[in-house]
Amino acid sequence: MHFTVLLLVVLFYVLPFNRMTQNIFSLNTFLNGQLLLINKPYGWSSFDVVKKIKYLICKKYNIKKIKVGHAGTLDPLATGLLIVCTGKFTKKLSELQSQSKTYMGTITLGGATASYDLETKIDNNYNTSHITEKSIYATTKKFIGKIYQKPPIFSALKNNGERLYEKARRGEKVVIKSRMVFVEKFNIISIEKLNINFKIKCSKGTYIRSIANDFGIELNSGAHLSKLCRTAIGKHQLTEAMDIKCFENFLK
Image (tube, rainbow, N blue to C red; front, top):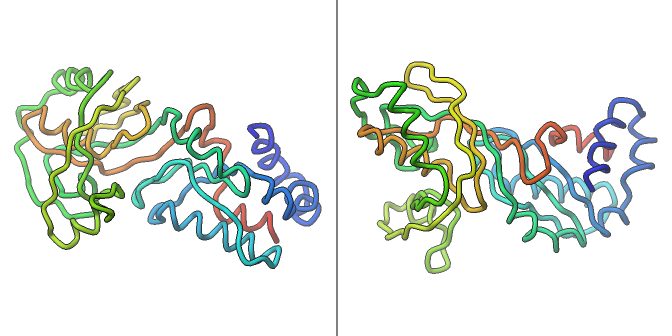
């Protein structure tokens, strides 16, 4: 599977589309199972990507339906690696979802939001004059290893059969239980005034938005996630991924 993805990227640059499609993609290959590494664009939901890929395959081969799914949600405001499986490979989604995730992003200090990112507006501003680089680096150590976090209310988790974000948008209050996740690495790349650029490797189910919010609380201030890109899922790397337009060109 890993080799197939690399081969697709190489062939995209060296072969004409028609010849490349004949050699790599066919209806049978999608039905038997393909693992696609997609670079999810900003503003798209993970479901938007799945829906688009399903549409393109059905249109190309004049079929009514095909199984397509993704191995781990990325928020609409996040970019980066999304694993999409087709056909029989959708049975592998649970296995793929359980793999560790690596992200690069930015935590912005001084302002908190209800969604813990910029999906909702900053509703609380906090003092940051007491925060030093030393305290920032010291705080990262509190988020390494087994930690407990509350998922954001603006999330796709279900409560009584309904997505939490649907309740949040109606202004309903929901009791969210803390749950344990594991952070393997949490490194500060740079600090630019109120913006903390970081890289983190963590377990399935970790909400980076919650880490950003809790990071601000630990600093006796407030914070939100202002940028996020997933760079790896297990052994699969963003550098091997294709964008939606590239995949669409493969099918022409």
